[in-house]
Amino acid sequence: MTSKIKVDNINKVSDDSNIIKKCGTTTTIGSGASNPIVVDGSAVTIGRCGGTVALASGASQTGFGREGSVNWQTGSIKTATFTATSGEGYFCNTSGGAFTVNLPAGSAGAIVAVADYTRTFVNNFLTISANGSEKIGGVAQDAKLTVNGQSATFVYVDATEGWINVQETQTSVTGVEPFLGATGGTITTCGNCTVHTFTGPGTFQVTRLATSTPAPANNQLSYMVVAGGGGAGGGDNGGGGGAGGFREDKAPVTPYTASPLEGAGTISATVTSFPITVGAGGTGAVISSPSANMGRRGSSGSVSTFSTKTSAGGGGGAAAYSSSPDGNAGAAGGSGGGGGMCGSPAGGGSGNSPSTTPAQGKNGGSSGPGGGGTTGPKFGASGGGGATAVGQDGTPAKGGDGGAGATTGINFSNTAFAGGGGGGAESGGCSTGGTGGGGPGVGGPSPTSGTPGTANTGGGGGGAGSRNPSITVGNGGSGIVIIRYKSSS
Image (tube, rainbow, N blue to C red):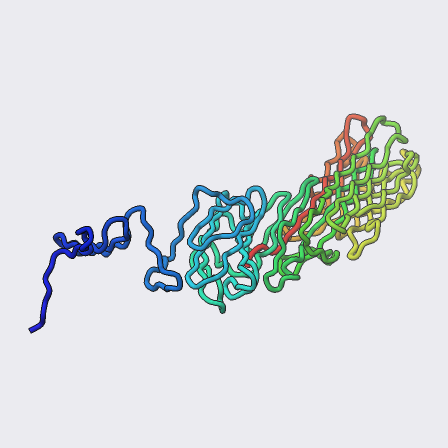
C-alpha cells in the first residue's frame, strides 16, 4: 500500500507563517514580500501585483515567448532617426522629412513594428536599417516604406533570412529599394507609370531613385519639351506663326506610342531639383493703321527647358508687305513662321533653328510674287511650319495651311502638339491650323481676326483677313513640359 502524507498547510517553525496554504481549490506557495505561486482550477499565477518575476543569471526560458505582438508606443511619436527596441511598435511621422529606424541587434523572436503616422511615406519615405550586416528578408540592404498609410511588422528569425516582414498593410517589404519617386507639376498615374505635367514654370524634384532591377533603366525618364508658338504677322496677308520646337525621348521601361521625333537624348534621374521653363507664345503683330506699310512680323515664342534639353520658340509669321520695317519673310525658330504676301516673293522662316537631332520642327511656307502690291492679285500668305510638316504656301484662293504637329501618348492619351498657324488672305477662303494647336488663318475682305494657337500645345497663331486696325491676329500658344517614369512593378 502506497504511503500518503495528508496536510492542508505547511508553516514555518520560526514565525508560523504559511509556506504552503490550501484554501478550497486554491493552493498558495510562498508568503509575505516573496513572489508566490498560486495554483487554482484554471490558472497558475507566478508573482504578485507590483512584483517582478525574473530568471536567474545564466538561466534560459521556454514557452514564454511573445505572441507575435508589440506594445505600441502611442505616447512617443517618432519624427527623427532612432533605434528601436524589441517588443515595441512605433508611429513614425515623416511629414518633416524622411528618416531611419535602426533595428536592434537580431535575436531569435525579436519583434519590431512601424506605422505611417501622417500618411506621408510616398514623398518622405521611412528607411528600415538592420544592425550591422544583418539582413531584411534575406537581403543585406535597407528596406524602404514608400506607401502612404503603410505599416509593417518585422520578426528576427535567423542569420540566413534575418528580419522577416510578417504583417503589412500594403506590399511585401524586403531589402529591395523602391521605384523612382518625384514631386512637381500636375501628377497623374496610370498602370505602373507616373506623369508630371508642367503648363508653367516649376520644379521637378526627384526624391528617391530606384534600385529595383534593372535599376539604370528604371531611373531613365521619358520626356516631351514643347516651346511657345510664334505669333502671326500683321496685315491682310500676314503669315501664320511657326510652332514651338518639339523634343521627345522615350525610356524603354515606360511603354507608349511615341511621336516620330522621339530620340532627343537620354535623361536619367538623380536626387536633385530640375527647374522647368515653359515658354510663352509669341504675340501676334499689332495692326495700328490700314496703311499698307504698317504690317509687322509677329513675335517669336519663348523657349521651354527641362534638364539639358531646350526647345526653341516658334518663329513669328511674316508681315503682309515687303514695305514693312520687318520685310515679309517669316522668322526662324523651332518651326519657321509663314511668309507674307504682297508685292514681292516672301520666304518662310527656317525650322529646326538652332539645329537638333531629330529636328525639332519644319520650315514655314513661302509665298509667290503678288504682281505689284495692292494693284496685283491678292495672294494668300503662307502657313507656319509644324513639328512634322512644313507650312503650306499661300495661293490666290486662300492662305496656306499650317504644318502638322507631332502626336505622342506620353500623357496616357495620344495627343498632338506643335502645329503651325494658318496664313491670312485679303480675299478668298480660310486656312487651317496644323494639328497640334495651330490657329486657323482667316480670309477677307471683311474685318475678321486671326485665331490664336491653343494654350499649352506650342501651336502657332493664325493670320488675319484684313488690315483693319479693329482686328487682331493670332498669338502663339504657350508651351508644355511632360515627364514620365516607371513608378511601380
